[in-house]
Length: 158
Length: 288
Image 1 (cartoon, each protein chain N blue to C red):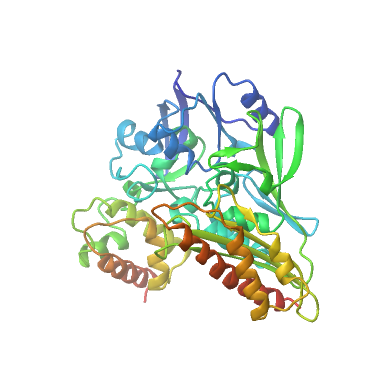
Image 2 (cartoon, rainbow over the protein chains, first blue to last red):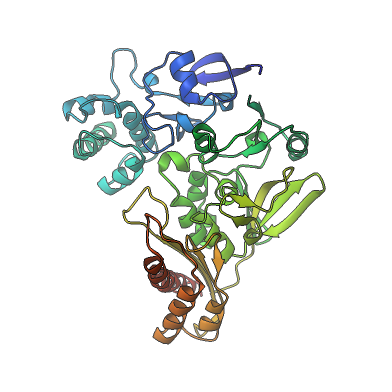
């Protein structure tokens, strides 16, 4: 079976890749493009470790085919920091120790950023529901939620 | 070996489906399809991605009702203020499916054609008397949503057919819907029981129309015909609610599984029917 030639935009950069139709976007990111920040947890859309945004919409990259990236704008965890400058969410996750093993962290950061892009002042309940599709087996979530609340406040200039 | 095509018109999509050698599967959001392909539960030779077809994602008001493109993601359904005002039950059902990430992709057509008995949006769509427009080699046909699923994982669609859009009728005055599901936690689970209710009232508050549809209590969603007998001509008092509860329980044909026993599902169906009807009744009454 011939590979598909896909032209897309990843973290603001025009990107091309060749991809067999059965490969997921997560396979392409990690194995073809070597963007290994997105993690493979469950491969069934339950854990959120592979979260990316596609045209601004939060999705699991394990539940999207690589060929579907054609013509879309994709953002991954690798696009979150600007050079050495961490995004406020990344900085607050460090300050609040909102991670232990770190495997879920890229997905949670991408998901939390998608929330704050829509809602700069979410309640704790809104944060918990928004992040319900991101599983963390270490932290118990409290530190994660506190870090998101704090980052949102800083980004609002509060 | 799997092949992929993303046609840019309904006609090209039908041609791709009709001309496929082996099994062709229609891709909308893919939140069920890709999991089944990866697990090996499903074998496919061709994926026909519908999302490049103009209008397949999106919502428009038409003829006093709404048209929802087959591949419209749940998140977009939740963001449409006018749809949510007219059909809150359908929107709350669609938005209960999965996480924020799943909502970014999951569609009504996928939820319906995956044909899980526990599909959340299906009872709400059937309660609303929604129809779907099906395209195939013989042209288009418009069928009620309840005519699609025929059993777990099975549909009435021919191999060359796929759903293009859903149509919601114009709402009469004093009319509203609601959907409730029971799961043992607050998020990210599959319905033990789901209940969609759609009610229309007269000026005095008596029901003139009542549709109750149950999910996860039979191989497909169940229309409870006796719900109309229980409610029409009455206000939603305890007599009416008790009759509705009884009708819901009598319509259940559930299985025992890890999510609930037969007895438990039957009881919960009655309780949720009461609660969903109460919500729909209140909403309808506020639309004077």
